[in-house]
Image 1 (spheres, protein in one colour):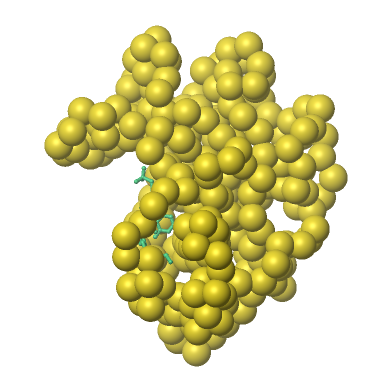
Image 2 (image 1 turned 135 degrees about the vertical axis):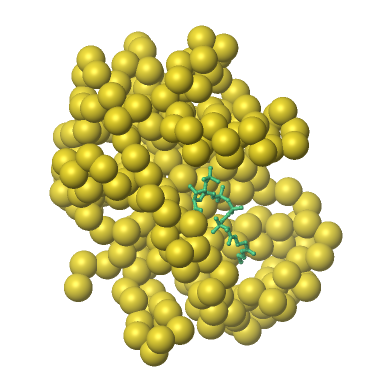
Length: 261
Ligand SMILES: CC(C)(COP(=O)(O)OP(=O)(O)OC[C@H]1O[C@@H](n2cnc3c(N)ncnc32)[C@H](O)[C@@H]1OP(=O)(O)O)[C@@H](O)C(=O)NCCC(=O)NCCS
């Protein structure tokens, strides 16, 4: 995992690069067609951004949304959530468009059985894999090549019913480690496990159909991503890697990537 890298597209295979979109240079994601970004094989880019975007970007983002995305935006009850959804989709379209040197309006999404979005048409975009996560006003967009991936971001905050949630979703080892952690570290540890599990279920796209309490993500982070065998309910196990993302204090984030077989 690297946080500082001189330029998009110059990384070595096996790297996960975390970058802020605000630092992506003049024009940010808005200049989809002027300069494209490259993504070497075996590298994953994780872009972080705020969903509080300037009004001129917001207008630009609305223009790129498809009719079904606009319908979905219209269904939000609260204006704040509507704006976050529009900003998130607009950002996603602009980021993906820069890798593909396409107009963001040309991108079409299809959805898996549990709602995971993927690029459909145009055909030249099908190698690209992505996943997004939002927490409050913050967003992460992970982009890779060919291998499925999942990302999760959470603001670390007090949760009243940690034990009840852990009893439902955590495996016995994770529950035990949580219960012996010093009280002041419990929320941090809870969100560490939570984001790892969410990243895994978002990589498979299975949503809560995945038996999360049978998946152990309590291992210590290492320099290289950790391998995990994930049962998919049909008796077949999938091979994934997960790792924690280096994020500012107050956030927890994890990435899971399909392992090359
Ligand atoms: C989408 C889901 C997988 C995660 O939702 P979430 O954590 O609330 O939201 P995030 O911000 O991390 O991710 C939302 C994005 O993931 C993507 N997404 C939607 N369904 C997805 C799926 N099945 N797989 C992967 N990604 C999915 C979409 O891009 C979505 O963004 P959009 O709403 O703007 O279209 C949710 O449906 C879910 O099942 N959550 C499980 C919650 C839970 O109890 N987890 C226990 C963990 S211990």
